[in-house]
Each structure stands twice: as C-alpha cells, then as structure tokens.
Length: 113
Length: 112
Image 1 (spheres, rainbow over the protein chains, first blue to last red):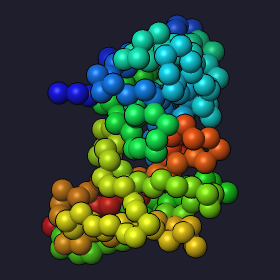
Image 2 (cartoon, rainbow over the protein chains, first blue to last red):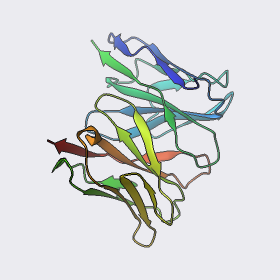
Image 3 (tube, rainbow over the protein chains, first blue to last red):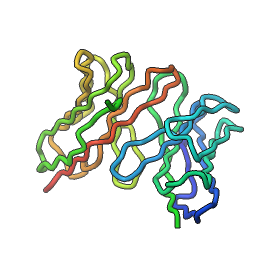
C-alpha cells in the first residue's frame, strides 16, 4: 500500500543534542512538508519541498534543517538552536503544484529530557 | 487576523444530534478548501474537500460562502465515533505551490 512513513514514533532529546526525524513516502508525490503541532494549537509549517534538491522555509524554520536528496525522503533535523522542540511533528506529501490535500504520516512525538 | 479561524469549542452534543462548524478565512483569493479530521494524538486525515457548489458525503455536508469568506461543515445524526477535532484548511494564495494553512481545529464530543 502507498503511504507516508515517519520514524521514530517517540523520540527523546537531551539538551544541546541534534536529532533527525525520518519521513519516507512511496506515493510518488513531488511535494513534501514538515509541520509542528503544539497542544491545543494548529499546525505550523516548518519547511517544505516541491522538488528534489530544493526546499523552502516555512513560518517557523529557525532551529530546524532539512534535505531532499531523494523524491521519497524528506528528513527533518531539530538542532540545538531550537529552544522549545517538544512537540508533535507531522510530515505530509502532496502531488505538488496542483491544489490537492495532503497525506500525512503518523507523526513523531519529540520530548526534551 | 489569523489566516484561518475556527471556534475551538468543545461542542458537546448527544448522539443523533446535528452539529455545524464554521470557519473563516482571510484571503478572498483562496481557491482550495478542505475539512480534516484529527483524532487525539493521531495525524490529521482528509475528511472532504469543499466545492463552490457545496458537497455531501453521507452524513457530512460542506458549504463554501465566498462572499463572506467562510466554510461550514454540517454533521447529521452524530455518532460517538464522530468525536474528534475538525480542522478547517485553506490554500495559501501567495504561491501556487499547494501550501495549506490549517485552522486551530474545533473539538466535537458526542455523548451517549
């Protein structure tokens, strides 16, 4: 079955550490997105990518980095510069420029310990 | 003003009730509209797209009012399983990249 897979499901980070969240899709979608969700809040866009080897900052990119070396993969690194990283991280994909809805992965819960 | 605004609720209704949610959006040039459903601690899932003429999917009806810039979702004959958060979603018009803006969500609790 086609879908989008995020791993790990739960992740614990120590202060000062960088951690990388994985996102893989086999839907042949061109566009991929990373969102952050905090309790009681909506989704906020971190980064997005329309094509391989290209990505753009979203609304809250500070303290995060991404890469898009393959169409299927869009990993997100949460760096030590992100001061409040505890949140639910959601990866999504869509066919691209046409105005379709997104397909989401099941998310990664990141907690700073 | 937020780009997409929803009443967070919660809306508490008995089984079998009809409930409606509204959502307003700020950019009159927005072209794509969706309702997503998000269960507690899960990812959002597409419930339905919203078309200009309005559309229905079983017990769910979505309406778009471009003049007033709002979208509505009507749920008839509510079931316990309808309990979730409903997210109003609108495309960001500043580019044609397909970026979507998500509302905060409206929480529905259906009681026995």
